[in-house]
Image (cartoon, rainbow, N blue to C red; front, side):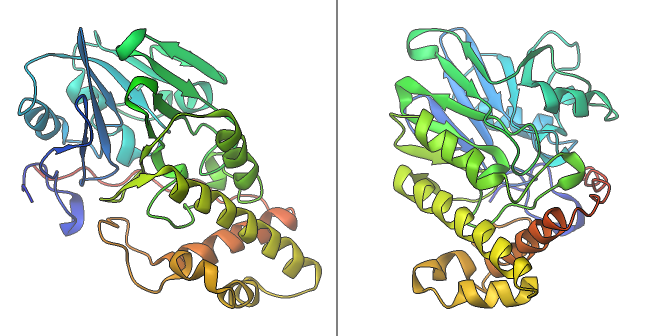
Length: 299
């Protein structure tokens, strides 16, 4: 693994660029996954990792093309996905696109700034083999999670609303919702078609569509288990134990940190966090403030 652009606190650096299809690549590490899409007139990036990784990202892009970056799409506002926007776009001449809720949160972040172009629930960029479809279906990981679909390549990038085949961290301070998550994902499942490959927010694996569908069903079981347990006066831990009794959920509740899981945490711990967030919502508890952005990567 290349060491360019080391993540803070000893985490993995920016990895060597990985080919997903003829025109789509993925760069892992130093925060969230960065998807690289080679278009006829330039390069589109989906997410830009932690701060101070811009040059490391561009160095990987230069391994596969000499075209300039002309478009940045941010799937949500967390610092490990928007952190290097300004380094890649120092003159502000690259179009930055995000869902409207995400853009509002980006505007309040130091050295990030609002997107140049926003959308509410749907936006099409380009045409033909260059076409990108952006979708928003509701709250989940945050209140601005975008699904980025490359139709001609039959590929989708999801950001953190789908990652590591485990529950995402529910950032209630940024409008996230464990109870709304399965409904949001079900809308994506029902609306988006023609996708064979799914690039998630953090893992090293490129998933297939059936894996995404299994994940959608799992999040529904988490929300249902939370509702049932809270109504019966049980705890999130007891709800987790009930889920653990279902063999079909074993992979979603593993006690092992996933390969490429640079956020730490096992799937089992993530499920408990999701159940806890759902209990808080059911009880009407106010969300905690969103955590501060991760520290910049060391150069």
